[in-house]
Image (cartoon, rainbow, N blue to C red; front, side, top):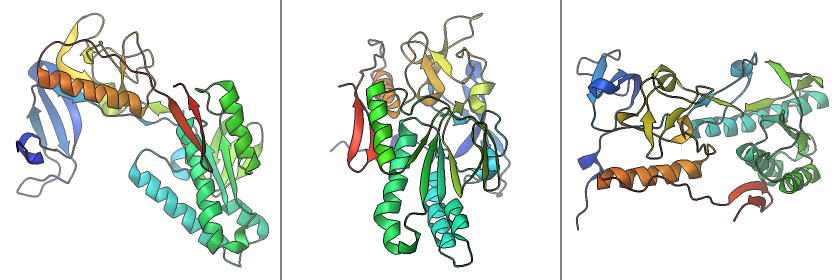
Length: 317
């Protein structure tokens, strides 16, 4: 049948990249603990030679220097983050159900804040609202009317990448469901149970999700190659080949980049899953064919944001 076992042509190394050396076609890795030598040591470094290297390290959370974010907020960068968020919501419902808390304290515990007004943040707000309304109130009937879901952003409207009419539609739908839309808000710091907002003062909350801003990871920062003005993304040509610094010119032989950590020079695209998937499929075909093809061209598709209650907004066709 021509089938191959997944291990026949590929091998996974669960490790952390320390250094990439383009000239010697080797990458130095730090063992993460899931891969060990026979003596059981976890601190070994080893070289991995390569013919072609595809960089897709993604990005890291950017707190913009806001004090208290790491100590008092959750994030949404992985499946583990999503599971932790769900568990925290369930824990806080259980906590708020205890008779030892005042009515005001229950409301504070059940105030769920999302920082960021982009599509995925809006979808998160919708999912939390549905989880609460459709499931948790069935178990905790005494807590009905005490839950608040709030979306905070520095922009003047949520879904800024969508047309204004669609953005206004989404905000109105959320307001009808008593989801608070707090735009043009400047968050100054987080403390235990408190978010300090320039325009509103102290805002008490139970759970906050910091879901805004990306920055380069250590691998991207360490590479001496061409990057965008902010330094958070590698610049590639239209064949997704990483560019050398301007003083060197040309491309880095055998190294490609895609995903949140890469942009095509002069043709920047949004950091969405659709862009990454199209680049990945094109690059895989390009490498397998081992020949020059037409450069990568993004095929724009409609962008959808789910706003809950079997409703959503669509930008494009």
